[in-house]
Amino acid sequence: MNFSNDRTVIIDYDAGNLRSVQRACAEVGCDALITGDPEVIQHSTRIIFPGVGAAGAAMRSIQAHGIDEVLLDRYEQGVPILGICMGLQISLTHSEEDDQETIGLIEGQVKRFQIKDLSLKVPHMGWNEVTVVRPHPVLAHIHPGDEFYFVHAYYPHPKDESCVYGIATYETPFCCAVGRKNFFGTQFHPEKSGRIGLQLLASFFKWDGSIAE
Image (cartoon, rainbow, N blue to C red):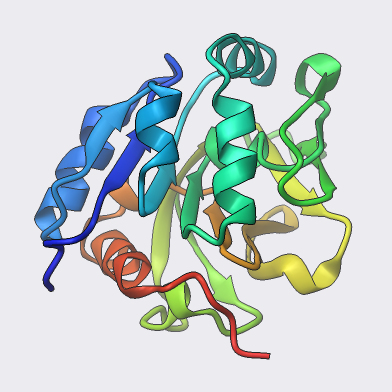
C-alpha cells in the first residue's frame, strides 16, 4: 500500500499500549505518529484512538488536553477513525465505569459484564471468536472462526442496533465491533491479535470512511 499522503495519528492520552499499536501499523506499511497535540490531530487524515484503563481517568486526560473537541471535529469532517478498547468505549455517550459521561460520537452505553458462571472471570481476558453480523469494509477479510484478543470488564452497547457490526460470546453474546459513518471501533485488540489483527488494520488503512447504503 502507498501511504505517501497519509497522516495517521495514534492519540496519546496517557492510556497505554501505544507502541504496540504503532508497531502493528508499521507491519502493514503505515508510519503512524503518536501524539496528544490537538493541532497535530486536527491536521491528520486518519486517526487511531486506542487505550486501556478506566473511563474516568481517560476522560479527564482527554478533556484537559482538548482532545475530545478535536475528535468531534475530525469525526464531523469525515476523517476515518478507529477506536480500540477504551478508545471505543469512551466514543459512546456514557460508561457505567465511574458513571462517566463520555465523548458521544455514537449514542450508547458501556456496560459491565454481569457474569453468573463463577468459572468465568472478569475482566474477560484471552482469545475469542468474533462473528460479523453486518458487513463493513474494516471487517472485509474476517471469516467465521477468526479469533481476536480481548482484555476488558466492560463492553459497548449502542442504542441503535444498526451500529453493531460484530459480536462475541462470554457467557452471553455481547457487542464487540461498532460503527457509524466514518467511525469504527473494536472492543478487542487488533494489535495483539496476530495475523488476523494485522489484516483488520490493513483494511482500516484502505477504508475511505464511507459506508455503502
